Image (tube, rainbow, N blue to C red; front, top):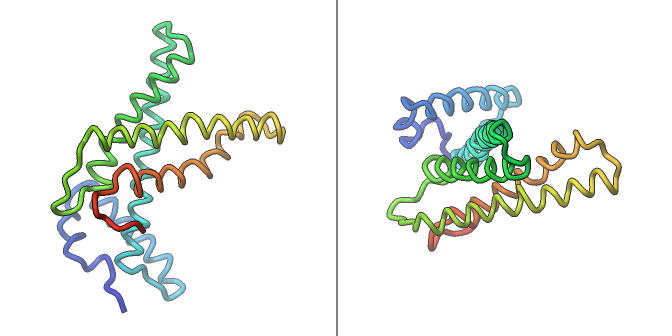
Length: 180
């Protein structure tokens, strides 16, 4: 039987930080729900799940930042597309910072070339957040006649997991690190 994540030294060392507190609460909730069925997550299962949750939290902050910058841009007289691009660029900077520092931390002894990782992050977000999202939007709205307001929500079901995988397996993957 594998060790439960809550007993590891890795978690014990982080439980006093804000992320550690949020992680502890999430771990308690997930294990409580799974406990109803007599199950618990292994350390590896928890780490993978928590990394995805962290990625989602960073994504929520990206969405908020992008929207606020967009609104600020149009209030200052920028064309709405220019304001949208500016919001996207600023939100990718936020994504890079938090994903690099907390979500996809460099492994022990791993050295990242920051600009290379930043460029991969930018390309990951651009491919899913600009290109794929807009292609899907055309499919939903023009071909399938789904309401314009629902299209972006449907996009998230595809772009979030894809963006997570691109970031995990490409943008923040260390040299010599095995693929999952």
